[in-house]
Image (cartoon, rainbow, N blue to C red; front, side, top):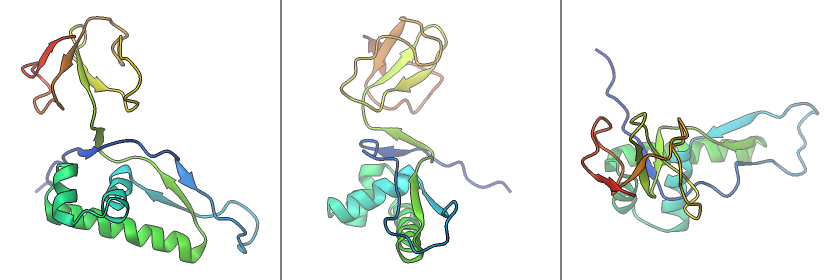
Length: 152
């Protein structure tokens, strides 16, 4: 039996930095070990520890179940604690995520895409470069159709 398909997690904004490097390390010289923090783990910590949301509200914000959110948050805390205690570098990247902003669909190649920087205007398809794009109301749950999309 194969595991369940992982649904993309909704992230409000990308992190302002892509990681952290320890200062004044007493580790031997050379490449320091690193901890990889997924974007969904970053978002879970941001929602709980910075925005002070409870797990239920934070899980709704990320469009995941509360138990799933708790697993993501616990993993993030373990990784950050390991980095702090063991003097490891933190690298924030990866994960099956989408950013909470405008979505577009390309009429040429049927690609659904968005841009993490909400301030930039989207004029062409991220995949094929076509200007034949339409704006979608939300993240396309049905990638094969354009029912929640309209002309830009």
